Amino acid sequence: MEPLRHDDPPWAGSHVLLGRLDADSERAVPVRRFVARSADGDRDLLVSLPRPDADPARWAVEAEGARRLSLPGFLPVTEVGGTAELPWCATPYVPALPLPAALRAHGGPLPEPFVRFLGAALARALATAHARGVTHAGLSPAAVLLTTDGPRASCFGAVRAAGPDGERRDGLPGLDPGCLAPEQAAGGRPRPLGDVYALGAVLAYAATGHTVPERDEIPVPLRSPVTACLARDPATRPQAHQVLALLEPNTRWEPVAGPRPQGVHPATVLDGADGPGPLPALVVAALARQAARVLAAELPAPAPGHPAPGSLHPSALD
Image (tube, rainbow, N blue to C red; front, side, top):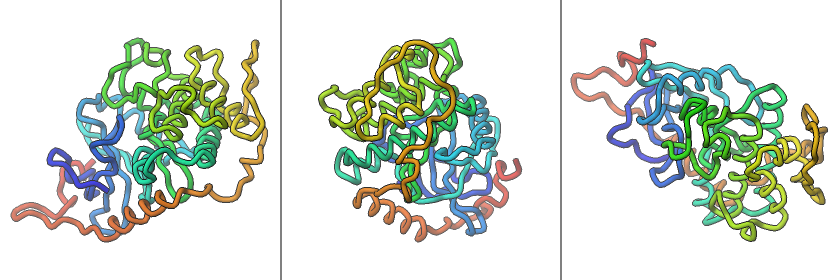
């Protein structure tokens, strides 16, 4: 948890913001994320607000869309609120590290077996979403949160929120250019195969420390699925359920002409794995330190002449 900045709001509705989830040095983050506490002190939350350079109306639409979703592997949004100028959304707090913070804690790229597990978990979540007609449109290293309950995909709809269809999105603040599929960068409507491109970039980042590595930098067991996901032509990328199959041992991706199969790939040995997978020890230690800081955090005392945190703040009336 990082200290609040001078330009951060003190509240989101009646929730008191305690600190930032993301460090200023982290990669492109499409939202401002905070650890917060309810004004009565009973609940801790993860709160997201739009960046100051974002369109709050488009951001609010995506936040409400995320609230209506209930998909495994996606960070659930349980509350939305705020004003037209400063909307926010929130989810119950669990200790969570954005993927860039996890690499810093680990001291470099993550072990190949864990990256394989991470990829399978994200591919499974995307496959489920795509089978239901939902495109995440926001996957990036910063959007992936590692928790003791498994990876979670956050920042739902970041590409849609950043710019409308038909307008170029490359270079827009908050979007990681290495994760933006070429067709989305050009202004195309976000579609499932754009999520697959972003998944490849996320796995490249987890395995090498950057989203656009040279092919030889990628560990050999991950090279085939990552390079397949990062194909510039979406027609030659695998679907998410095929990426899940690729992450099983002894499987290769071969582009297939003609119609693509619909639905979710049958269960694999990864689907039946017990638990969320082994987090690297230094990442677990970082999660423990974060949890301890949150538990020890105290609600700030109100300044003289000002109400108690959250009690009469205008956005608390939303």
